[in-house]
Picture 1 (cartoon, one colour):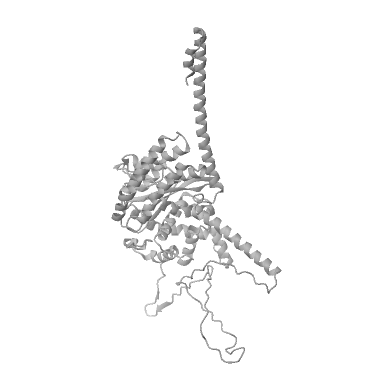
Picture 2: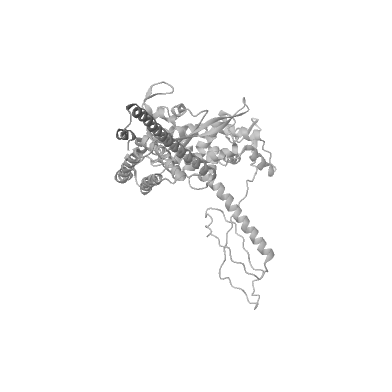
Length: 530
């Protein structure tokens, strides 16, 4: 009802009517302003409530997506340890309080997996004290064997290789002959390749600082100073650099890559504190043929120019998150970092895992039915990918054309309809806008049979680095960071290809001193995929 229209029904003086009308108009305008202010505050309150719930869940909740898998493993390890300790304490109390004749219920245990067949077996035969029957005195007859196996380990054992080179002399020409000194990756070094491999694996894969390795050796009466260990690490980093460079070259021959970055604290001696550097990661696409390759690039900052410098004149599909630093690669033709010639832009592939996470956070914060519906629709896309996991690229492309493209079209229409009905600047609107603004990049994968749906492979490769930072705390210098990137590139690629990084590294360090550069590809930690 319009209050101003009611004035005509009242018998008021014209001057009074004008005054009342002005007053009513002012009240109506004030009410409209108050309503807009209340709506704006409601939207802001909802957004803050969503953000608060998100941080509370990250801080306190152990549920899905709250913690990285490796972090959850740490907490689960603690829980399992505590449960076992409590059970042991209960058993001790039972032993102390119960009579020996009381039969306690048998503890339920999960079925034990057989021990790996490739491990060496040391047999211990336990024969009875007598081969005659303890009742009648007759000879016992073997009717079978009861075999149980226990897993054991021998900690790092130090031993010494003695290289004896007999010297022979010729009396007539007065010459001395001896076998040449075997070549080594560190000339005249104290360490054999097994020890060098142990140091590198411990530091870069198990994330143990050198002072801990020094302590481990000291327990066995071996003196390995940190300066000596550091010298080995530095020299091996230089020796292995060509292998890392070659892996980077091979990676850039692919036409689709994953990219991501993670911060790394770097010591800043001048200021007595650390500054933030970044470890950029690039990974091959698992849906395309060829061995898997992972390359790390250590840089002092997060500027997008670092990605441009690494990629150079590379062209193809690049799977990334929504970090603005990558946008210059996709915007337009860019200048080559060295010769300034124009390079065609890369093609962006957005990550559905990031888009899904927006709705997941919204659901956890407010139990939004819109978020639940979005998650259900995105789950359909992932179910189609699971169905096509073992297909050829051509078969997967046909499957995506049949199922993924229609599902994407329906999802896009639903997002647009829902967005119209959603208040602007709300958490729901922001979650929807994240997907709609990146829709072309998000849906591009479904037009092919060999492009990935998300950037999870590279994130999974970075997670061990992120967890390791809790141990080594910071990189000592930019050079140290780049050296770590070289080693992590080689060990990470070996792991991706199903190789034992320690065995590969030891074998490579043995071969490297005499290996011809023309055959360097044979040393790379790659395994061909049939």
